[in-house]
View 1: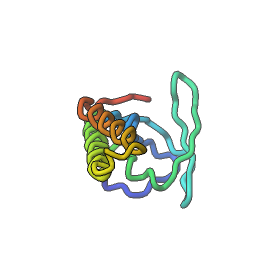
View 2: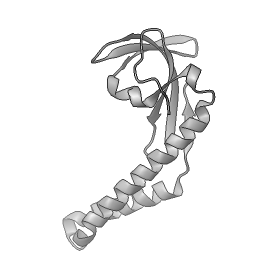
View 3: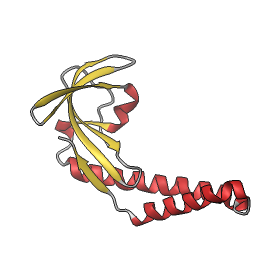
Length: 132
């Protein structure tokens, strides 16, 4: 997607994240105030207040420079759908694994909860939670 693989102090980026494990993608516009090998800090302006947070190198795959992405909403919808499909895959794999244990009293409730969770995920649609 983006050619930028490293970020530096002063960069303004879109930070994407899984919001609810059902297709929700949160979008935050942050300005990096420092970026080291193990962690960095960032400022986000919400309702006129500067909110400082930590940023970790593992989050770089979820960051895109503002100058490289004109429409963060379409990117967030695509990521939200990917999150939703990944969660459905998780449910299907888990339900399949516990399918033989359905008759066991100790696992029956867990198996039922997993099937219900999977159905909720199937019924959901990708959506964006804006935080910028």
